[in-house]
Length: 496
Image 1 (cartoon, helix red, strand yellow):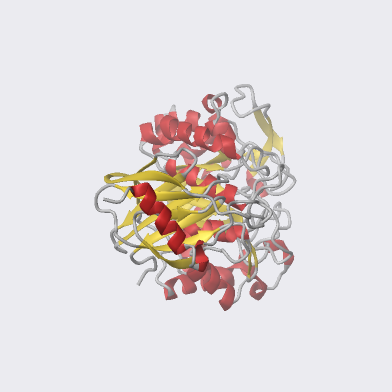
Image 2 (image 1 turned 90 degrees about the vertical axis):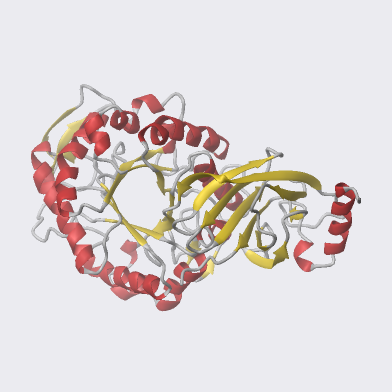
Protein backbone atom coordinates (compact mmCIF):
# COMPACT_ATOMS: atom_id res chain seq x y z
CA UNK A 1 0.00 0.00 0.00
CA UNK A 2 1.05 3.57 -0.57
CA UNK A 3 2.95 5.12 2.33
CA UNK A 4 0.74 7.64 4.20
CA UNK A 5 3.36 10.42 4.05
CA UNK A 6 3.71 9.97 0.29
CA UNK A 7 -0.09 9.98 -0.04
CA UNK A 8 -0.27 13.17 2.02
CA UNK A 9 2.28 14.89 -0.23
CA UNK A 10 0.43 13.83 -3.37
CA UNK A 11 -2.90 15.02 -1.95
CA UNK A 12 -1.31 18.29 -1.00
CA UNK A 13 0.03 18.86 -4.53
CA UNK A 14 -3.36 17.95 -5.98
CA UNK A 15 -5.42 20.28 -3.80
CA UNK A 16 -3.05 23.17 -4.39
CA UNK A 17 -5.00 23.86 -7.57
CA UNK A 18 -7.98 24.84 -5.44
CA UNK A 19 -8.02 28.45 -4.22
CA UNK A 20 -8.86 27.67 -0.63
CA UNK A 21 -5.65 25.74 -0.12
CA UNK A 22 -3.40 28.45 -1.47
CA UNK A 23 -2.98 29.92 2.01
CA UNK A 24 -0.27 32.11 3.43
CA UNK A 25 2.38 30.12 5.26
CA UNK A 26 1.98 32.39 8.22
CA UNK A 27 4.10 35.43 7.32
CA UNK A 28 2.45 38.09 9.43
CA UNK A 29 2.82 40.80 6.80
CA UNK A 30 0.48 38.84 4.54
CA UNK A 31 3.03 38.22 1.78
CA UNK A 32 3.13 34.82 0.14
CA UNK A 33 6.19 32.63 0.51
CA UNK A 34 8.24 32.15 -2.64
CA UNK A 35 8.31 28.38 -2.08
CA UNK A 36 5.65 25.95 -0.94
CA UNK A 37 6.65 23.89 2.07
CA UNK A 38 5.91 20.23 2.67
CA UNK A 39 3.35 20.11 5.48
CA UNK A 40 4.11 18.47 8.79
CA UNK A 41 1.74 15.59 9.52
CA UNK A 42 0.15 15.30 12.96
CA UNK A 43 -2.48 13.15 14.61
CA UNK A 44 -5.45 14.47 16.57
CA UNK A 45 -7.10 11.78 18.67
CA UNK A 46 -10.76 12.24 19.62
CA UNK A 47 -12.61 10.11 22.16
CA UNK A 48 -16.33 10.86 22.03
CA UNK A 49 -17.01 8.59 24.99
CA UNK A 50 -15.26 11.08 27.31
CA UNK A 51 -17.53 14.10 27.75
CA UNK A 52 -16.92 17.33 29.62
CA UNK A 53 -18.84 20.58 30.16
CA UNK A 54 -22.09 21.49 28.44
CA UNK A 55 -21.88 24.82 26.66
CA UNK A 56 -24.30 27.52 27.84
CA UNK A 57 -23.32 30.15 25.30
CA UNK A 58 -21.09 32.85 23.83
CA UNK A 59 -21.83 36.54 23.57
CA UNK A 60 -21.03 40.15 24.42
CA UNK A 61 -22.19 43.21 26.35
CA UNK A 62 -24.26 46.12 25.09
CA UNK A 63 -25.76 47.50 21.93
CA UNK A 64 -24.73 48.75 18.48
CA UNK A 65 -22.91 51.59 20.25
CA UNK A 66 -22.04 52.42 23.84
CA UNK A 67 -25.01 53.40 25.97
CA UNK A 68 -23.72 56.90 26.73
CA UNK A 69 -23.58 58.10 23.11
CA UNK A 70 -27.27 58.90 22.62
CA UNK A 71 -30.56 59.39 24.43
CA UNK A 72 -32.51 58.05 21.43
CA UNK A 73 -33.58 54.43 22.06
CA UNK A 74 -33.63 53.70 18.32
CA UNK A 75 -29.98 54.72 17.95
CA UNK A 76 -28.79 51.50 19.56
CA UNK A 77 -30.10 48.89 17.14
CA UNK A 78 -31.63 48.22 13.76
CA UNK A 79 -32.91 45.09 12.07
CA UNK A 80 -29.82 44.56 9.90
CA UNK A 81 -27.45 44.74 12.86
CA UNK A 82 -29.60 42.46 15.01
CA UNK A 83 -29.69 39.91 12.19
CA UNK A 84 -25.91 40.15 11.91
CA UNK A 85 -25.23 39.39 15.56
CA UNK A 86 -27.85 36.64 15.87
CA UNK A 87 -27.61 34.87 12.52
CA UNK A 88 -24.04 35.61 11.39
CA UNK A 89 -21.88 36.01 14.50
CA UNK A 90 -24.24 33.69 16.35
CA UNK A 91 -24.42 35.11 19.87
CA UNK A 92 -26.35 33.06 22.39
CA UNK A 93 -25.60 35.22 25.46
CA UNK A 94 -26.19 38.96 25.95
CA UNK A 95 -24.92 40.83 29.02
CA UNK A 96 -26.03 44.18 30.38
CA UNK A 97 -25.68 46.32 33.48
CA UNK A 98 -28.68 46.70 35.75
CA UNK A 99 -28.29 50.43 36.20
CA UNK A 100 -28.78 51.92 39.69
CA UNK A 101 -31.67 54.13 38.60
CA UNK A 102 -33.59 51.08 37.41
CA UNK A 103 -36.12 50.43 38.71
CA UNK A 104 -35.80 52.83 41.67
CA UNK A 105 -37.66 55.92 40.47
CA UNK A 106 -37.26 57.83 43.75
CA UNK A 107 -33.51 57.31 44.16
CA UNK A 108 -32.51 60.94 44.78
CA UNK A 109 -28.95 60.00 45.75
CA UNK A 110 -28.14 58.15 42.54
CA UNK A 111 -25.83 60.05 40.22
CA UNK A 112 -26.89 60.69 36.60
CA UNK A 113 -26.60 57.48 34.58
CA UNK A 114 -25.55 56.92 30.97
CA UNK A 115 -27.84 53.92 30.76
CA UNK A 116 -31.42 53.60 31.89
CA UNK A 117 -34.44 51.49 31.02
CA UNK A 118 -36.09 54.19 28.94
CA UNK A 119 -33.30 54.05 26.35
CA UNK A 120 -32.60 50.30 26.66
CA UNK A 121 -36.03 48.69 26.65
CA UNK A 122 -36.56 48.93 22.89
CA UNK A 123 -33.19 47.29 22.16
CA UNK A 124 -33.74 44.58 24.76
CA UNK A 125 -37.13 43.65 23.28
CA UNK A 126 -35.96 43.84 19.65
CA UNK A 127 -33.01 41.56 20.40
CA UNK A 128 -35.34 39.02 22.00
CA UNK A 129 -37.67 39.19 18.98
CA UNK A 130 -34.76 38.64 16.58
CA UNK A 131 -33.49 35.69 18.60
CA UNK A 132 -36.99 34.20 18.60
CA UNK A 133 -37.24 34.71 14.83
CA UNK A 134 -34.15 32.54 14.37
CA UNK A 135 -35.15 30.16 17.18
CA UNK A 136 -31.99 31.03 19.11
CA UNK A 137 -32.21 30.28 22.87
CA UNK A 138 -30.65 33.62 23.82
CA UNK A 139 -29.62 33.99 27.46
CA UNK A 140 -29.68 37.38 29.20
CA UNK A 141 -27.11 38.13 31.91
CA UNK A 142 -27.32 41.11 34.27
CA UNK A 143 -24.47 42.46 36.35
CA UNK A 144 -24.47 45.13 39.05
CA UNK A 145 -21.79 47.83 38.84
CA UNK A 146 -23.26 49.63 41.87
CA UNK A 147 -26.35 49.48 44.04
CA UNK A 148 -28.39 52.69 44.19
CA UNK A 149 -26.39 55.35 46.01
CA UNK A 150 -28.88 55.52 48.87
CA UNK A 151 -27.95 51.94 49.82
CA UNK A 152 -24.20 52.62 50.11
CA UNK A 153 -21.80 53.72 52.82
CA UNK A 154 -18.13 54.65 52.92
CA UNK A 155 -15.48 52.01 53.53
CA UNK A 156 -11.77 51.52 53.95
CA UNK A 157 -9.96 48.37 52.79
CA UNK A 158 -6.40 47.71 51.68
CA UNK A 159 -6.97 44.47 49.76
CA UNK A 160 -9.64 41.84 49.14
CA UNK A 161 -8.82 39.77 52.23
CA UNK A 162 -8.39 42.70 54.60
CA UNK A 163 -9.67 41.48 57.98
CA UNK A 164 -9.35 44.99 59.40
CA UNK A 165 -11.43 46.68 56.71
CA UNK A 166 -13.90 49.24 57.97
CA UNK A 167 -17.28 50.34 56.67
CA UNK A 168 -19.42 53.20 57.88
CA UNK A 169 -20.13 56.85 57.22
CA UNK A 170 -21.72 58.63 54.31
CA UNK A 171 -20.99 57.73 50.69
CA UNK A 172 -24.31 58.30 48.89
CA UNK A 173 -23.02 57.85 45.34
CA UNK A 174 -22.97 55.09 42.77
CA UNK A 175 -19.46 56.13 41.74
CA UNK A 176 -15.99 56.01 43.31
CA UNK A 177 -16.45 52.79 45.21
CA UNK A 178 -18.03 52.72 48.61
CA UNK A 179 -19.80 49.56 49.69
CA UNK A 180 -23.30 48.28 50.33
CA UNK A 181 -24.57 49.06 53.81
CA UNK A 182 -25.21 45.65 55.43
CA UNK A 183 -28.30 47.19 57.00
CA UNK A 184 -29.64 47.53 53.44
CA UNK A 185 -29.44 43.86 52.41
CA UNK A 186 -33.23 43.56 52.35
CA UNK A 187 -33.68 46.77 50.34
CA UNK A 188 -30.98 45.64 47.91
CA UNK A 189 -32.68 42.27 47.46
CA UNK A 190 -36.00 44.01 46.79
CA UNK A 191 -34.28 46.28 44.24
CA UNK A 192 -32.77 43.27 42.47
CA UNK A 193 -36.15 41.53 42.35
CA UNK A 194 -37.72 44.66 40.91
CA UNK A 195 -35.04 44.73 38.22
CA UNK A 196 -35.62 41.09 37.31
CA UNK A 197 -39.34 41.76 37.22
CA UNK A 198 -38.73 44.74 34.91
CA UNK A 199 -37.12 42.37 32.40
CA UNK A 200 -39.81 39.74 32.94
CA UNK A 201 -42.49 42.31 32.14
CA UNK A 202 -40.62 42.93 28.88
CA UNK A 203 -40.90 39.21 28.07
CA UNK A 204 -37.44 38.14 29.23
CA UNK A 205 -36.57 35.68 31.96
CA UNK A 206 -33.07 36.71 33.02
CA UNK A 207 -30.74 33.70 32.93
CA UNK A 208 -27.95 34.94 35.19
CA UNK A 209 -27.41 37.68 37.78
CA UNK A 210 -24.13 38.91 39.27
CA UNK A 211 -24.47 40.86 42.52
CA UNK A 212 -21.30 42.88 41.83
CA UNK A 213 -19.05 43.51 38.85
CA UNK A 214 -15.31 43.54 39.74
CA UNK A 215 -15.77 43.91 43.52
CA UNK A 216 -12.17 44.94 44.21
CA UNK A 217 -11.94 48.10 42.12
CA UNK A 218 -12.81 51.67 43.09
CA UNK A 219 -13.66 53.41 39.81
CA UNK A 220 -14.81 56.92 38.83
CA UNK A 221 -17.83 55.30 37.17
CA UNK A 222 -20.41 53.05 38.85
CA UNK A 223 -18.52 50.82 41.27
CA UNK A 224 -18.84 49.18 44.66
CA UNK A 225 -16.24 47.22 46.62
CA UNK A 226 -16.38 44.25 48.97
CA UNK A 227 -13.80 42.33 50.92
CA UNK A 228 -13.98 38.57 50.47
CA UNK A 229 -15.83 38.39 53.82
CA UNK A 230 -18.33 41.06 52.86
CA UNK A 231 -18.92 39.37 49.50
CA UNK A 232 -19.73 36.04 51.15
CA UNK A 233 -22.10 37.80 53.55
CA UNK A 234 -23.73 39.51 50.56
CA UNK A 235 -24.42 36.14 48.95
CA UNK A 236 -25.78 34.61 52.14
CA UNK A 237 -28.11 37.49 52.96
CA UNK A 238 -29.37 38.53 49.52
CA UNK A 239 -29.47 35.46 47.29
CA UNK A 240 -32.10 33.49 49.28
CA UNK A 241 -34.49 36.43 48.98
CA UNK A 242 -33.88 36.74 45.24
CA UNK A 243 -34.26 33.00 44.72
CA UNK A 244 -37.55 32.93 46.59
CA UNK A 245 -39.05 35.17 43.91
CA UNK A 246 -36.91 34.01 40.95
CA UNK A 247 -35.84 30.43 41.67
CA UNK A 248 -34.49 29.80 38.17
CA UNK A 249 -32.11 32.76 37.89
CA UNK A 250 -28.47 31.67 38.13
CA UNK A 251 -26.28 33.66 40.51
CA UNK A 252 -22.77 34.05 39.13
CA UNK A 253 -19.68 35.72 40.59
CA UNK A 254 -17.38 37.12 41.69
CA UNK A 255 -16.40 38.60 38.31
CA UNK A 256 -12.92 39.27 39.68
CA UNK A 257 -9.77 39.03 37.53
CA UNK A 258 -8.64 35.70 36.08
CA UNK A 259 -5.08 36.63 37.12
CA UNK A 260 -6.15 36.98 40.74
CA UNK A 261 -8.37 33.90 40.88
CA UNK A 262 -6.07 31.69 38.79
CA UNK A 263 -2.42 32.57 39.37
CA UNK A 264 -0.55 30.26 41.73
CA UNK A 265 0.60 33.16 43.91
CA UNK A 266 -2.88 34.71 44.08
CA UNK A 267 -5.73 32.23 44.07
CA UNK A 268 -5.66 31.41 47.80
CA UNK A 269 -6.37 35.00 48.78
CA UNK A 270 -9.31 36.15 46.70
CA UNK A 271 -13.05 35.76 46.32
CA UNK A 272 -13.41 32.27 44.91
CA UNK A 273 -11.36 30.65 47.64
CA UNK A 274 -13.40 32.53 50.25
CA UNK A 275 -16.63 31.30 48.66
CA UNK A 276 -15.32 27.75 48.41
CA UNK A 277 -14.40 27.80 52.11
CA UNK A 278 -17.82 29.09 53.18
CA UNK A 279 -20.38 26.30 52.56
CA UNK A 280 -23.38 28.59 52.98
CA UNK A 281 -22.01 31.18 50.54
CA UNK A 282 -21.04 28.43 48.10
CA UNK A 283 -24.57 27.09 48.20
CA UNK A 284 -25.81 30.54 47.12
CA UNK A 285 -23.59 30.62 44.00
CA UNK A 286 -24.58 28.80 40.80
CA UNK A 287 -21.50 29.59 38.69
CA UNK A 288 -18.01 30.93 39.29
CA UNK A 289 -17.22 33.82 36.94
CA UNK A 290 -14.02 35.69 36.13
CA UNK A 291 -12.98 38.52 33.83
CA UNK A 292 -10.11 37.91 31.43
CA UNK A 293 -8.00 40.83 32.62
CA UNK A 294 -5.12 41.62 34.93
CA UNK A 295 -6.60 44.90 36.17
CA UNK A 296 -9.99 45.38 34.55
CA UNK A 297 -8.47 46.75 31.31
CA UNK A 298 -5.36 44.81 30.24
CA UNK A 299 -6.01 41.37 28.76
CA UNK A 300 -4.47 38.43 30.57
CA UNK A 301 -1.18 37.43 28.95
CA UNK A 302 -1.83 34.66 26.43
CA UNK A 303 1.07 32.56 27.70
CA UNK A 304 -0.57 32.36 31.13
CA UNK A 305 -4.06 31.26 30.09
CA UNK A 306 -3.33 27.53 30.21
CA UNK A 307 -1.94 27.71 33.73
CA UNK A 308 -4.65 29.99 35.11
CA UNK A 309 -7.56 28.13 33.59
CA UNK A 310 -6.23 24.75 34.67
CA UNK A 311 -5.90 25.99 38.24
CA UNK A 312 -9.38 27.50 38.38
CA UNK A 313 -10.82 24.20 37.22
CA UNK A 314 -8.78 22.12 39.65
CA UNK A 315 -9.30 24.43 42.63
CA UNK A 316 -12.88 25.60 42.18
CA UNK A 317 -15.16 24.11 39.55
CA UNK A 318 -14.04 20.48 39.81
CA UNK A 319 -14.27 20.12 43.62
CA UNK A 320 -17.51 22.10 43.93
CA UNK A 321 -19.33 20.96 40.80
CA UNK A 322 -20.01 24.60 39.85
CA UNK A 323 -19.60 25.66 36.20
CA UNK A 324 -17.07 28.33 35.28
CA UNK A 325 -17.94 31.38 33.18
CA UNK A 326 -15.80 34.10 31.61
CA UNK A 327 -18.10 37.12 31.60
CA UNK A 328 -15.92 39.96 30.30
CA UNK A 329 -12.69 40.52 28.40
CA UNK A 330 -11.21 42.92 25.85
CA UNK A 331 -7.87 44.61 25.16
CA UNK A 332 -7.13 42.81 21.87
CA UNK A 333 -6.19 44.88 18.83
CA UNK A 334 -8.07 44.26 15.60
CA UNK A 335 -5.28 42.77 13.54
CA UNK A 336 -4.75 39.07 13.13
CA UNK A 337 -1.51 39.09 15.11
CA UNK A 338 -0.58 41.20 18.11
CA UNK A 339 1.81 44.12 17.92
CA UNK A 340 4.15 43.10 20.72
CA UNK A 341 2.27 45.17 23.29
CA UNK A 342 -1.30 44.04 22.73
CA UNK A 343 -2.61 40.63 21.65
CA UNK A 344 -4.43 40.23 18.34
CA UNK A 345 -7.35 38.26 16.95
CA UNK A 346 -5.63 34.87 16.78
CA UNK A 347 -4.68 35.41 20.42
CA UNK A 348 -8.36 35.90 21.21
CA UNK A 349 -9.08 32.52 19.63
CA UNK A 350 -6.29 31.01 21.74
CA UNK A 351 -7.79 32.60 24.87
CA UNK A 352 -11.25 31.17 24.12
CA UNK A 353 -9.68 27.77 23.50
CA UNK A 354 -7.85 27.89 26.84
CA UNK A 355 -11.04 28.71 28.75
CA UNK A 356 -12.90 25.84 27.07
CA UNK A 357 -10.15 23.22 26.97
CA UNK A 358 -8.22 23.81 30.19
CA UNK A 359 -10.85 25.58 32.29
CA UNK A 360 -13.83 23.70 30.86
CA UNK A 361 -15.71 26.98 30.90
CA UNK A 362 -19.29 26.80 29.72
CA UNK A 363 -19.87 30.50 28.98
CA UNK A 364 -17.70 33.13 27.27
CA UNK A 365 -18.70 36.81 27.01
CA UNK A 366 -16.77 39.64 25.35
CA UNK A 367 -17.02 43.24 26.59
CA UNK A 368 -18.67 45.85 24.31
CA UNK A 369 -19.85 44.13 21.13
CA UNK A 370 -19.92 47.18 18.84
CA UNK A 371 -18.73 50.79 18.80
CA UNK A 372 -19.69 53.11 15.97
CA UNK A 373 -16.49 55.13 16.41
CA UNK A 374 -14.48 52.26 14.94
CA UNK A 375 -13.10 48.83 15.79
CA UNK A 376 -10.74 49.40 18.70
CA UNK A 377 -9.36 47.01 21.26
CA UNK A 378 -12.60 46.98 23.27
CA UNK A 379 -15.12 45.87 20.61
CA UNK A 380 -15.61 43.16 17.98
CA UNK A 381 -17.27 45.27 15.29
CA UNK A 382 -18.29 48.79 14.33
CA UNK A 383 -21.93 48.47 13.41
CA UNK A 384 -21.97 46.44 10.21
CA UNK A 385 -18.17 46.53 9.84
CA UNK A 386 -16.68 43.26 11.04
CA UNK A 387 -13.10 42.92 12.25
CA UNK A 388 -10.71 40.02 12.62
CA UNK A 389 -11.73 39.59 16.28
CA UNK A 390 -15.32 39.21 15.11
CA UNK A 391 -14.30 36.37 12.80
CA UNK A 392 -12.03 34.72 15.37
CA UNK A 393 -14.98 34.72 17.78
CA UNK A 394 -17.38 33.47 15.11
CA UNK A 395 -15.46 30.18 14.87
CA UNK A 396 -16.83 29.43 18.36
CA UNK A 397 -20.00 31.53 18.62
CA UNK A 398 -21.62 30.39 15.37
CA UNK A 399 -20.80 26.69 15.46
CA UNK A 400 -20.59 25.66 19.13
CA UNK A 401 -24.22 26.04 20.12
CA UNK A 402 -25.90 25.81 23.54
CA UNK A 403 -26.19 22.22 24.65
CA UNK A 404 -22.96 21.16 22.94
CA UNK A 405 -20.71 18.89 24.99
CA UNK A 406 -16.95 19.08 24.78
CA UNK A 407 -15.32 15.71 24.21
CA UNK A 408 -11.78 14.46 24.72
CA UNK A 409 -9.25 15.68 22.15
CA UNK A 410 -5.47 15.30 22.17
CA UNK A 411 -2.95 16.48 19.60
CA UNK A 412 0.37 14.79 18.87
CA UNK A 413 1.80 18.27 18.23
CA UNK A 414 1.68 20.55 21.28
CA UNK A 415 1.68 23.62 19.03
CA UNK A 416 -1.70 22.67 17.56
CA UNK A 417 -4.63 23.63 19.78
CA UNK A 418 -7.96 21.92 19.35
CA UNK A 419 -11.39 21.46 20.88
CA UNK A 420 -14.20 19.16 19.77
CA UNK A 421 -17.93 19.28 20.53
CA UNK A 422 -21.00 17.20 19.83
CA UNK A 423 -24.57 18.45 19.93
CA UNK A 424 -27.25 15.78 19.95
CA UNK A 425 -30.12 18.23 19.41
CA UNK A 426 -28.52 19.55 16.22
CA UNK A 427 -26.96 16.19 15.34
CA UNK A 428 -23.62 17.88 14.72
CA UNK A 429 -19.94 17.44 15.44
CA UNK A 430 -17.58 20.42 15.47
CA UNK A 431 -13.79 20.58 15.72
CA UNK A 432 -11.89 23.86 16.04
CA UNK A 433 -8.15 23.80 15.35
CA UNK A 434 -5.68 26.64 15.89
CA UNK A 435 -2.21 26.69 14.34
CA UNK A 436 -0.30 29.64 15.84
CA UNK A 437 2.99 28.35 14.45
CA UNK A 438 4.69 29.49 11.27
CA UNK A 439 4.57 25.97 9.79
CA UNK A 440 1.91 24.40 7.59
CA UNK A 441 0.50 21.20 9.12
CA UNK A 442 -1.73 18.37 7.98
CA UNK A 443 -4.09 16.79 10.49
CA UNK A 444 -5.35 13.22 10.61
CA UNK A 445 -8.21 12.43 12.98
CA UNK A 446 -8.02 9.21 14.94
CA UNK A 447 -10.80 7.68 17.02
CA UNK A 448 -14.19 6.07 16.63
CA UNK A 449 -17.39 7.70 15.37
CA UNK A 450 -15.51 10.50 13.61
CA UNK A 451 -17.59 11.85 10.70
CA UNK A 452 -16.27 11.10 7.22
CA UNK A 453 -16.67 14.67 5.92
CA UNK A 454 -16.67 18.21 7.29
CA UNK A 455 -17.36 21.71 6.06
CA UNK A 456 -14.09 23.67 6.28
CA UNK A 457 -14.03 27.29 7.56
CA UNK A 458 -10.83 29.33 7.91
CA UNK A 459 -9.66 32.69 9.24
CA UNK A 460 -6.09 33.88 8.78
CA UNK A 461 -4.15 37.10 8.24
CA UNK A 462 -5.32 37.10 4.63
CA UNK A 463 -7.99 39.71 3.93
CA UNK A 464 -10.30 37.24 2.17
CA UNK A 465 -10.18 34.50 4.81
CA UNK A 466 -12.74 35.51 7.41
CA UNK A 467 -14.39 32.41 8.84
CA UNK A 468 -14.84 31.58 5.16
CA UNK A 469 -16.37 28.33 3.93
CA UNK A 470 -13.79 26.82 1.59
CA UNK A 471 -15.37 23.49 0.75
CA UNK A 472 -15.49 20.00 2.24
CA UNK A 473 -12.70 17.84 3.63
CA UNK A 474 -12.38 14.32 4.95
CA UNK A 475 -11.00 13.22 8.28
CA UNK A 476 -7.45 12.73 7.03
CA UNK A 477 -4.88 15.01 5.42
CA UNK A 478 -6.71 18.16 6.57
CA UNK A 479 -4.53 21.14 5.76
CA UNK A 480 -4.01 23.55 8.65
CA UNK A 481 -2.16 26.62 7.34
CA UNK A 482 0.30 28.46 9.52
CA UNK A 483 -1.10 31.26 11.66
CA UNK A 484 -4.74 30.27 11.17
CA UNK A 485 -7.94 29.10 12.83
CA UNK A 486 -9.95 26.35 11.14
CA UNK A 487 -13.40 25.09 12.12
CA UNK A 488 -14.67 21.77 10.81
CA UNK A 489 -18.42 21.19 10.95
CA UNK A 490 -20.46 18.07 10.35
CA UNK A 491 -24.22 18.54 10.68
CA UNK A 492 -26.51 21.48 11.47
CA UNK A 493 -25.32 24.54 13.36
CA UNK A 494 -28.53 26.60 13.24
CA UNK A 495 -31.58 26.02 15.37
CA UNK A 496 -34.86 25.18 13.65
